[in-house]
Length: 380
Image (cartoon, rainbow, N blue to C red):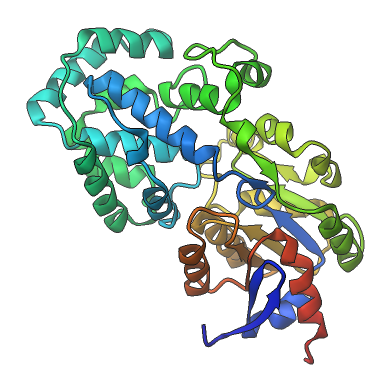
């Protein structure tokens, strides 16, 4: 941390890269990731990924998979590769990696069943499969060991790397059964994930059709809470010269809106870029790979404030800092601040951001005004 200057805040230590002080002093637009930055999601997405993966794996193998196998350490190790910003993709990785430890004969049998059930709805597909397959034992300890080894070697390629490494063994029919990465209502993974996350009522409100897998009351989204204080936005408004805020997030808009409530009012709609917006842009333009770690969302969210001097993106994952770097490679007016106290592995996240050369690192989004004020107070 020799290249970083430090100062203390009530929530913890803030770090500013020496060479970025002047950049941070010039910030006049602030763009925020949502999950882990605007919303505390430590008890929501983590649990949703684990339950989705264990539910699907139990249906495919007949073996009881403990959701605790997919713990916070494994979650962090995959996220820090930069290739799993989307939790549907993380869930897919857990499933394919677990299936890869099964014997070849078992996988051939499972692929044969998969061909026979591909045309049904997601819930019917999974239910029929679970009725046809012969149970096979899967050791929870072996799952964890496999995932940790994979996370160490996977690199930033995300799902593409998973498929390249593991799909030849697991079988393409299994992927077709899961229909990943297709949309909610088609893919087993995204449909079950969003039902568990949102709960039946919010799921139907968001997707305009009823839940297939669960009728439980509420979802894991109810465990979320808003992180930034009203005073944080008031201070930033004064520092930036107005409500010059944007959102660049891989979350679905309606789920985030459900928790953010009135906090969302400080963000003009044209400066909000959600998963839904990126999907729409890819369909309309024919462009591919606009989701993080592409810099597309960040650039779109800041564009309403043109001409701006310097934008800062606040994020909590490797995917976020890579997005800022990719945006900056095309336009140098993008800086990055990582937050580390509102995530599952604070110490590892702090050191990851320092290692990756973040312009600033702070405990939470509430220190962004402190960082800008500190930078502006430093002699040039």
